[in-house]
Image (tube, rainbow, N blue to C red):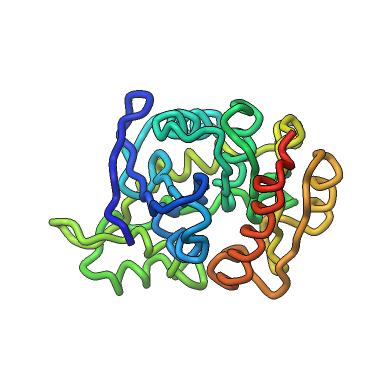
Length: 269
């Protein structure tokens, strides 16, 4: 895994991981509670074909905490980041919340996005369609060990592994890189129906649905595919929400195949 790099965008400090190599840039955007490092396997699978650059989004990973967590702010951060790379237009892949940021980015800054991959994210991000907010307000600020941190998180979720990717040892104990109050604010800011934003862009798009998704229903996925021109829908059966981890090779091959058709054959209109 390359060492993280840092850049100031819109008055804030951001971390990112640039996997380098030849090929067009693929900007990777993680979901809530995630960080850029989770795209390491995808970057390795696409090495030599795409330069995967993954951003620690605001309030996540090693990027600066606090501020406004509206999806428009996340999208404008990503736009500023692409401009700083001087590589636009670029393909963008986003998982979960990062998928929403990706389609907000494509709608707000269409000239910066050549193709769009949205992995297991809905436009109907509200109850009873899905559970849009995980209450993390009682998660501890610090614990005595990583194991204690895992136990505390698993009081609320079946498996803490995804969240522990953001665990770190500080001077006063083990904790998470993200601030739980920030995450509550960010999740609440993303509650709503974003069908109009999704349908507003025209870049070639791949919508990936996990077969066991608790975020994106089959009905909504089919609706999204019909509502937006140039959109392909692919379901990965047997995968849960974190489909890139459940089936890394299939995930990478599906993304690679789509980008090959969307970018290398001039499918972008």
